[in-house]
Amino acid sequence: MIPKAAVINDLSGFGKCSLTAAIPVLSALGVQCCPLATAVLTGQTGYPHYTCTDLTDMMPQYIRRWKQNGAAFDAIYSGYMTGAVQLRHLEEFLLHFRESGTLFLVDPVMGDDGRVYGMYTPELLEGMRSISRSADLITPNLTEACLLAGKDLGKVTAYRDSKSCLSFAEETARVLQAQAGRPQHVVVTGIRCPDSDAPFIYNLVLTEEGMHLLRSRYFDRSFSGTGDLFASVLCGCRLRGMDTVSAAELAERFLSHSIADTMNENIDRNDGVYFEKFLRELIEGVSSACGRQHTHNKEEYQ
Ligand code: PXL
Image: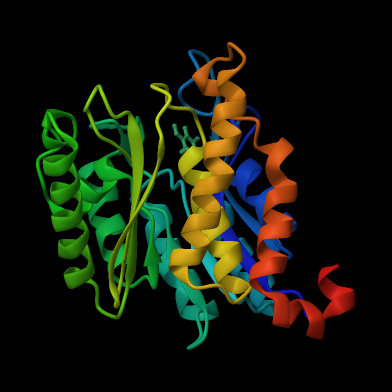
C-alpha cells in the first residue's frame, strides 16, 4: 500500500507554495496526498492583489465525511491556517485520525524574515504553540521558531556573523524541543546568516541524537514556497522510511538546485521556484535511499 498523508494547507493559484508544493512532491516520493484545503486563494498573500476564500467551515465536514468513509492516514501534515479557529478544528481532526504510528508534522506558518504574515494574531500563535508541542516533527523558519519560543523577532535580523546567528538558532530549537510533550525532531529551515564573504543558507536539524547543520549556497534572494517544499520532502521521505537527517539532506539538495536554476532567470520572488525540473531527483533519491523497500515493493515504487 502506498503511504497516505492528510495535508491541511491552503490552495493558492500562484506562488507554488502550500498544496501546490505538497501535492507534486509527495506524489514524486510515492506518497498519496489527501488535501484538506484551509482556504482557496487566487495567489499567495505576497502578491499585491489576491482574494482569499476561507474554508474554516468546511473543516468539520472533512472530518465527518472522511470518518464516515473510514479514512486513515500514515501522516498528518499541517501548514497555513487562516486563524485560531482552524487550529481548534485541527485538534479535533487529530482526535479522530491520529494513531500511535501516525507521523504528525507541523509547519507552523506565521511569518518570515523577522516579520509576521497578514493572518497572524496572538491567538493564532497560542494555537500554533499548543499544536506544535504535540507534533513529532516541526519545521519552523527562524522567525517562526522565535515566535514559538517567545523570543524577540528583532533578533532574526540583528546578527552580524554566522556563528552567533547559528548559536541563536540552535538555542531556540533546543527550547522548542524541550517544550514538546513528546520526543520531537525540530528542523529550523532557511536560516540566512549575514556574513557577506560567506553567503550560506543553513538548515538545522535537531533530533534525539543531537544537532546536524546542513549548509548550501545562498543566492541573496528568497522565494515563495521554499519552506513548504522543504517540509513536504521531509514528510514524504519520512513516510518512505528515511530518517530525518537523510530526508533533510535530500530536501536541501532539491531546494538548492531548484533555487539555482530559478536564479538564472529574472523571476518575481512571489512566483516561487522551478522545482518541477528537479522532481526526478526526488524520485531517484528516495528509491536509492530505500533500496530494500524498493526491491520488496517493486511494482509499487518503480
Ligand atoms: O509559504 C507560506 C504561505 C502559505 N500560504 C499562503 C501564503 C504563504 C506565505 O506568504 O501567503 C497563502
